[in-house]
Length: 74
Image 1: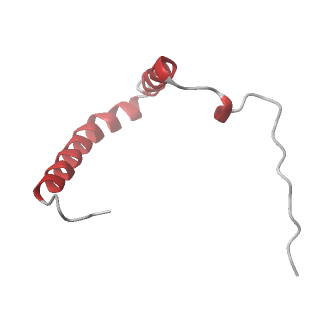
Image 2: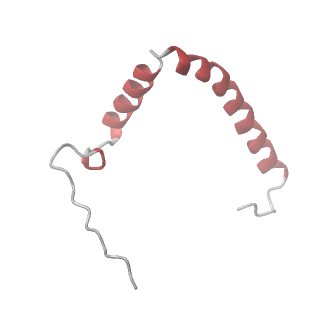
Image 3: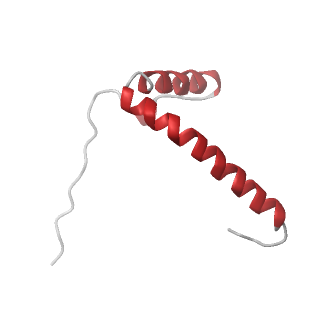
């Protein structure tokens, strides 16, 4: 016995996947989003700790990739 298939209808409002975000518009959107989220105190503390950790991980990945260029890792 198969479950009945439900059809998902879209709402008539604004859909985020239909907003064009390219070139300068995307940059403005990204900067605005970061500015809004950094106004929250909890997010500020998260950013203070996560940005250095992210930079460290990026540096380690870059060094690892350069030291073994012949080995496929993906």
